[in-house]
Amino acid sequence: DAKTTQPTSMDCAEGRAANLPCNHSTISGNEYVYWYRQIHSQGPQYIIHGLKNNETNEMASLIITEDRKSSTLILPHATLRDTAVYYCIVRVDNQGGKLIFGQGTELSVKP
Amino acid sequence: SQTIHQWPATLVQPVGSPLSLECTVEGTSNPNLYWYRQAAGRGLQLLFYSVGIGQISSEVPQNLSASRPQDRQFILSSKKLLLSDSGFYLCAWSYTQATEAFFGQGTRLTVV
Image (tube, rainbow over all chains, first blue to last red; front, side):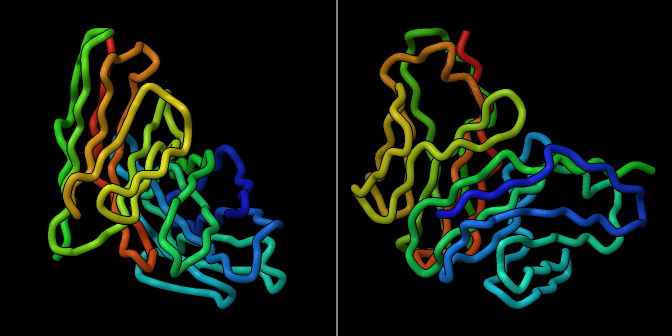
């Protein structure tokens, strides 16, 4: 699975959009981009995933660049409860197997 | 609906003692199962994963082992704990065709 690079930490004002970047320059054609988040002392929670088209669900939007070498997770209206570590992962789907986490981005939403 | 159970929530064990952490999944069959460890803040390290009964893949050499005696049961063990085994242990499952993974609430292990 391809490696990912994320900023170590970010701040965001409550009510504003949080834009979390991820670089995955070695991604291959059959690898999906997944995002998870982990609130302190809890298990990670799935947020969203995509292959090459932008995706949106009730939690977030995922924007993947045309060359697929980077992506951005967007939380449209961040709340204090969105404070967490956000992990970007790339992996091959439909094959089972391992799910490797990087160090993630620690997002602090401030009032 | 599917649920994942992991216990205990916290555990304090002396150095040299054995360890057995159990994880069970309900509401699905033939899941992929995972054990992760998180030490000193963030950074989840994949320890073991399993795609079927008796099939265990180890990601890193360590003082731990895993077993899958039943389809929806995944056990993490150690014969003799080390101080460095302290951490937050998480079990997870995913469908065989691997969309998102679902995590348990974790076990915080302190080896003293």
